[in-house]
Image (cartoon, rainbow, N blue to C red; front, side):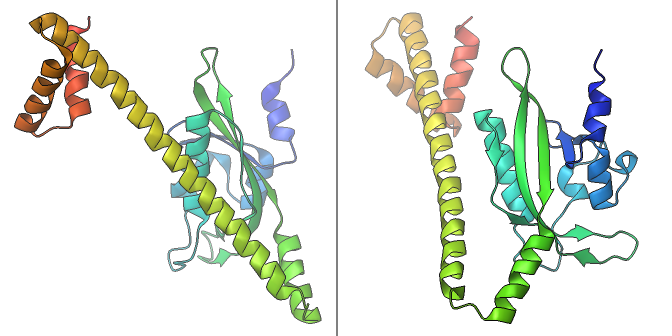
Length: 228
């Protein structure tokens, strides 16, 4: 039988395995080597507890961008490939932070019911390429520097637009879910009180205002109470 754990550990690309609540549950040898952290010191800890942003760098986006990507994977159950990301690593012995650049991919692991049970976080380090590229640009004083900066800024704009679109889709999904639950609650009240839809909805709104709770929360109570 194939030893998948041995294969995972021998893979030369750094991997983390995460639970859906973003706790580290696995780490291969390549990840140990690139981060200089032992898996026994990492497994069971929160992802961003072990890999935070530098506390004195207000411009750092590593945690926020990775967190957003992982949430997209959990919501869509689809692989999410991130743009090249600057994500510094902390040396616990010296207390210093080292600039590192990565190309991350986040992959869902689904169970037989199609639910996300694990997340694979894979990175390819591109620090040397990014730093070399920066040095070449400075040394050669490239005339395309402004255009390249515009391209990078545009890429960041597109990334922010994608994140906003993802948030809009989530709001739409929540709105559709609320509409369905509210409709179920109105139908149950119509049957229970022998009244029409307008009267049932008005009673639902009145009770929501009286108790100072959201209409959807009250609808969920009605469905849970009378829908069985």
